[in-house]
Length: 111
Image 1 (spheres, rainbow, N blue to C red):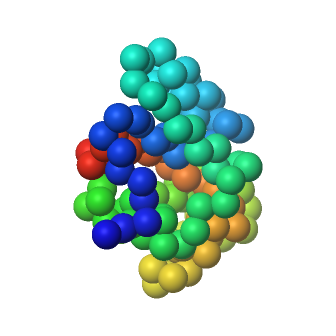
Image 2: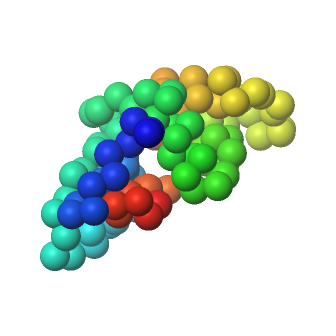
């Protein structure tokens, strides 16, 4: 059993309220008839374990959750490709949640 809530009666949305895409996605999901649990990652800490589980359920690497073209990422790490292990990518997400590439919706057991 994972740490991510997979209630079939609600949508859990991981988003950043400081981004236009995050705000738009929240509005779109809120307009649906589904119960919504919004997780604003700018205000709520998401653990490395949760990020790893989200990436696993999406069938992607943790590094794929990160927008490497985001100004904050570029400022800190530059534009050249960097080689980090999964633990390092998790630390980046934990400390800089604004670099999340896109909001993630968990609809029951569907990601």
